[in-house]
Amino acid sequence: MNATSIRLGLLALTLAASSAASAADCSLKVVEGWVRMPPAAMPMMAGFARIENPCAKPLTIVGASSAAFGEVEMHETRVVEGVSRMRAVPEVRIAPGEAAVFKPGGLHLMLMEPGAALKPGSKVAIEFATKDGGKALGEFVVKKAGE
Ligand SMILES: [Cu+2]
Image (tube, rainbow, N blue to C red):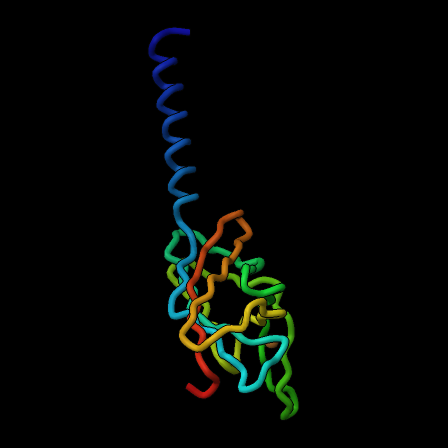
């Protein structure tokens, strides 16, 4: 092996390392997060947010979790034959430069088994996991229903 091939080998290694780092640096951005507090104490509540994908590749949310809740699921509300129903959504794929909007009447986070009693104005953190092993943390403000 001569000196030139060693240098080329090092250059290739450096390039591979830097592209891996930039891929890991890019993750979903969670904005405008809020939790809807039900009018009466309930074992579950709903969370909403806008989740943006600023990365160059599609990202797929495969789950969410929070220390404030026993379990977090992704759900979608749909009106079927005049009746509003919701179903669990195992994955949400977001194209590069696009956003998934979790909002009342559509996609939402189902927040089960709240731990401490939540008060309007308090904040909870919810973390999203993507298929590529990435994570994104979002801040959610608790609001009263109807606000
Ligand atoms: Cu639901």
